[in-house]
Length: 315
Image (tube, rainbow, N blue to C red; front, side, top):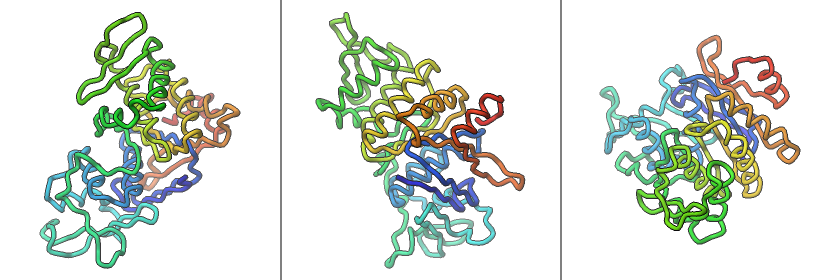
């Protein structure tokens, strides 16, 4: 598992270090404090800056133009006076150097990965639509991977039973069968002889299906979830957290989750405090420091509990 994340000159981060990472990590903070950026950094780091992943990261922000190498300029912080032509995510380095491969502000630039000889460059000609991720990523707005692609990996296996279990124990106890095809998901409920479109059950059930499929597909990998509470009623979050901790330990998954919700933080703390989850959880708040830079403030579980009891702002 990753125990420390160091990010320098990447997007909003001039220089950020998060130490003490555990198996299940919850990241809170105000809007524009960099929570999603941490997940983007993890995606890029885990893929060794694969161009399809980098392009998808930019695409989800509306910053990618096919074949435009200068799209990669959006990765850099731009405020670092020294070393501003290089960003770092742990040992991974992306640097921009003068070349004839792209144009930024009238200067010919290229974006190379690490210190390899011959150099390997980020490539804006690669499609962002099918990123070669080495993590399982759930963005706030939904998955860039169709549900059918996730379903195909678990259909007719024991993992299919796990998906149904997660759905039954969180949002809909009547589900007995599931089927997902391109652009369509259907469920069969107890007492019914015919399947129904999952849309009939509401947005929360659709979101839970996405989370269930990504959880079982993350075996042996990192699972990144942006805004855990999106589309979910607070009443289902406690059981979902229990399942996240259970499967993370069972299947060697390291989980990174962001949130704006105090309910989510409380349910996380309650689950993390159980004996079987001791030492598995980490909470950090991203906030702006006095000089304007973003800093990471970690909380031990006891300190987090005290902060919640005192109604301190930790979201």
